[in-house]
Length: 445
Ligand SMILES: NC(=O)c1ccc[n+]([C@@H]2O[C@H](COP(=O)([O-])OP(=O)(O)OC[C@H]3O[C@@H](n4cnc5c(N)ncnc54)[C@H](O)[C@@H]3O)[C@@H](O)[C@H]2O)c1
Image: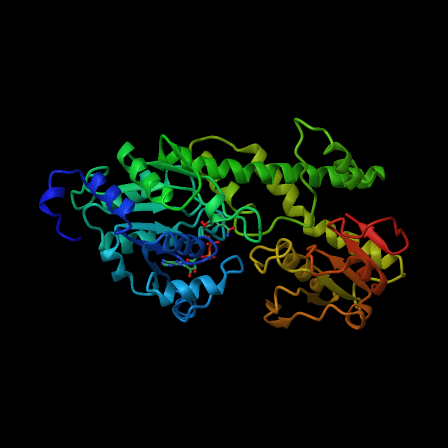
């Protein structure tokens, strides 16, 4: 750390850091430059700071240093400008953290094979911070995780050498709420919740975010901040589970669930529409609630809503297979030997992310039943599938006409659904993308 001048010697480390943040002389570090870390690094650099990004992925680091963005929501022009101006640096070498006043950790938090939290990426990143920890440093964990991670797991790693939290260094948790592909809400205008280990930790963490983000909401502890994120994602998972169950129920009763939800959504208060679908996808909703239920279990509490929603949502890909069987029946065909095209492998519309995508599960299940599977996704040129690499087929009349059944799994804007209806022999529509009733051709979720 730079030696304090005579005038700053009497001031607390928190005051010194706050002043460096105000003056834009602080150097900022971001560990993990993915969907969360890269937009954050770019925002902070655009606020006028020199930002040092560290990632273990050499390819990503190389691309950034060449001024290229690999995240859809981050324009390459922004990255290029910041790199050229020397405000954004990327490296696989963690020693750049030594010169950083703040470090945001934005690494993955997946589930293990046993579906328990896998915090190994957080620990690996924190070990690197520990090596380069110095007085006055602020560390903020942004990865989604179970309540207690910051205080129970990270804090002891940083206090080992006799450093006192809130005095010698600062530690906080701030959940990331980014919604990839959302044109209205991005890192800058999504309110940021922050909870520090001590009030001084919260104060400097708030100070950092206030330099660029529109709204910062301090809370009283790291555990509250951790729980906020899990509540938000559990809320979605449980409500999606509810409408998925309603969809299965409506199918039995021959009621159009989409019409029901559309009409219910006209209520101006007390109702928020959620929609059924082929299953949960992405890095957050299918995973995060299990971080919470794991921690609840460790405290002797059974999180029944989470488990039930997981059960209902987890069954949806299997239900889609049944619908494919129904659609093929319309043409007296079996799944085995039929050609099936999955439209959309990204887990939601208009993005290129296939992590945990239910489309992959559906494709695998259809393949196991003997279908000849291909996919079409203008956002995803190729995927790993069945031990090899599969390329997207083009969205044309000729290619769709080759298939016995087309499964609408993701309603990308790039798909023109009246054409899908015209070009396809049979359709399974899991997104209510095909308008009108076409009982001889379309089977709806
Ligand atoms: N993607 C989202 O929409 C989203 C939204 C909110 C919260 N989150 C949470 O944010 C966290 C990060 O998610 P993401 O989507 O940005 O993941 P990501 O996979 O897009 O990016 C993570 C990056 O971290 C790097 N990395 C892994 N281990 C590292 C290490 N030890 N040191 C340095 N870099 C390392 C990876 O190479 C990768 O580039 C997760 O906890 C996730 O749950 C994600």
